[in-house]
Length: 102
Image (cartoon, rainbow, N blue to C red; front, top):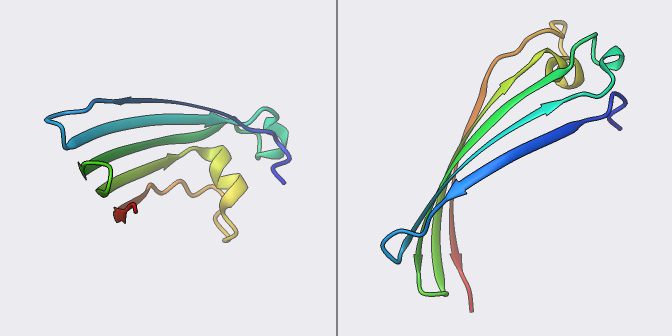
C-alpha cells in the first residue's frame, strides 16, 4: 500500500516508419499527494523509455526497449530498505523481445 498517494502522468510519441519500424519515446513523472508519508518530499521521479519495434506483417515482432529512471527523494523514501533512505541513484534497463503471433 502506498500511503502517501501517487499521481503519475506520461506522454508517448511514436511513428510508423518504412512499413516495418515503429520507434516510440515515453517520458513519465510522478508525485506523491501526501509528502508527510514520504519523508517530507513530493517528487517521485522521471522515467524515460525508448521503444524500437521492428515488425513483419502481423506475425512477427522484435522489440528493443531501453529505460532510465531518475528517482526523486520521495521515491527513495518509498523504495529504499537500506540504511541510506535518501539515496537517489539512477536505474537503467535494456530489454529485447521476440514475439510470434499465430
